Image 1 (cartoon, rainbow, N blue to C red):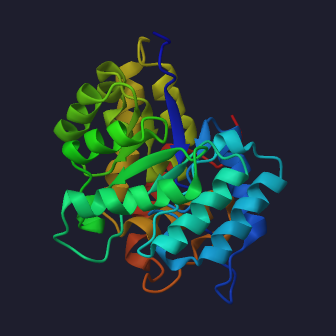
Image 2: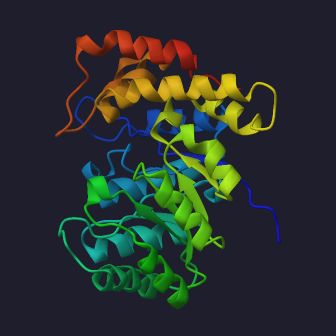
Length: 300
């Protein structure tokens, strides 16, 4: 069996202009810098990207801008899961046509208490509509979506669509759940959402990490991944855990964007769309400490 490739994908932030339109130039510039700093790929339009505040048309245009700027589609796993199946199909078909590695797909997330049968039907509707080239990374973030991706659901989807279901991002924060997915379904790539769990993920047979703080600390997290078996493992793990701990104590998305703005010395990166609000001055010291620990946003 071929050894699994362990990778880091960034749920890259979405910069906005003063009129709250999508700032494509900063989006592309930052995306390229993250790849140059050691990330293997990007997962735009996930939670950290404020995806559910970004329209279908905007997501499609921004994805085309990344590829047009020379980023390989093979490095892109854009988020495409929406409440309406038609929107999910449109985004997923677009990404697939562009040659993206796959799509990171939330289940429909407004209605709660739905059954695995209903969620299966929702995924099946999209997979059947997009066609055989679609590659789906399931997105399990029940604390936000209210709709879990259960082991039974994964098993059923894999039985029905073994070529379409290729991975899962577990943002539940529950390592036992991640470990159970890795153990039950070794044929798919399972990513943790916390870089602090990279050692456990890799040891269990997982595929790596898709983490919000990769936006700020790509070099440190890549160093940990590359140094897992080296003598500096503990120091590298301590560094990434210290940066992550700071963000866990703050409003996550405004804090990540504020840190990126400080790294670039460009306050335009900090702007968020409602319902988020810009980070207050009471958090300035914490952001400065995160940036000090992570270093500037420059290539490796």
